[in-house]
Image (cartoon, rainbow over all chains, first blue to last red; front, side, top):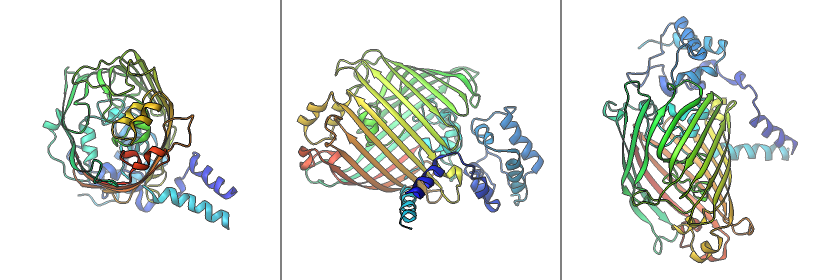
Amino acid sequence: MKTSILLTLISITNVSFAQFKLDSDLNKTYSCNACHGDKGISPNDEWPNLAGQKKTYLVEQLKKFKSGERINPLMTPMALTLSDSEMERLAEYFSKMGAP
Amino acid sequence: MKRIILGSLFFASIAVVSVSEATPDYAVRFNNISCTSCHYNPTGGGPLKHNGKLFQGRWFETAPLEIQNYLSANFRALAYFPEKAKTTKGGMGVMSGSVALHAPLSEKKDTFLVIENNFAGFSAAPLRDTYLLYNFNKDGVYSWYESLLVGRFRAPFGIVTDEHRTYTRFQTGTRWYDFETGMMFSGTPSSKLHYDIALVNGKNFSGQTLNPGQSEQWGQIVNLRYMPSFYLFGVSASNYKTTQAPDSRALSLYSIVSLARVNNLIMPATVKLEYSQAQGFNSILNQGFASDPNYVTAVQNSKSQAILARIDWLLTNKITLTYKFDWLTPDMDFPADVYDRHGVGVRWAISANTNLLARTELARATQPSESVKTGQLAQNATFFILEAIF
């Protein structure tokens, strides 16, 4: 019984699960692929491709979204969930993907 | 060992069951508490904005959106196979065919006119989202004052869903085709908090149908959502003055947990829970839901309670599995009279903004008069819905 209660509590409390996020598939882990594609290629003309984009540029834009310097109704709330180190990891991940 | 197995089974029961990735799922999964990122209506639902249309059709190549920036449409066809198909309503039909016009009225694009009319289908309300919307800020800016909406709109109440047979929705008079008339003020002061306050005062004119329990005189609705992390808590309350029944009122407590936001690779799922109490809406049960009109008459002013539990599991980007549990007690003074329903199904995104939904549902009704099973609440059913929304 204690085990069940413990498992339930773990599931509903705000525990950081960052350690479970795999570097091998950051795109899906952070749901970037929902708009920017599984391979970093956007499905439409209005959203940017991220594959092959410069790391410094990506980090800078994510930080601008988070600070409110750049506003977008879809990206701003997403960026608010990212720490600086997560931004770095994501930017590096996309910068190393093959450009279209 | 037995405890571990029981604990594991508990989690497996949560994990394995699931359906569609509907609007509230997006809100929690993508940390976007503001529905106006995708919808005109700050409560969600109804015509989609440009971003909403791109997002909904993101796994496919979408048609050019020039016309769709001003025009939306909603089509649903149903094939419904109830347990008592020979003696009750079943078969195929068009659930809805609506067209919406939405256009900015000012160069700054802060004022919008939205008009949606349903031309075909079962739904009782031909006139749907029809309002003038003024945005105080640009989309994406958090502020205590976000928008003012005047006209006819979906009540900001409980978990927004487009499923007509969600017990917490029709028990509180907030089905996807129930609309209120009045004004609504909304705010999103931060990425964690959103509120709606509505004053309504509808009139049962031809073309502006009011359903049982809805406000014919002044009524109030308050809705508050708090999303500190991968989970959201919400509370809604309504109080309507009506000539159809004694004052109707409803309360909803709801929560949405996005396991996908915790780890999309291992748990691409969303869990939704809602508990609601209501009084004054039970006449809705006479609209084909309950078998015995005399029973509905007996409980029409009773205090009811209902529970919704739903799990949606994203199998692939285009296929979602769903488990849904509905539970309703029409009269809390007679808790033995219970309606409940377990549903398991799948939703398949066929092409951009086109989905096919299939589900089978097992129903249980303990009220003695439901043994005849002529109403929808008491019958097992299997149905398919083809929907196209742009």
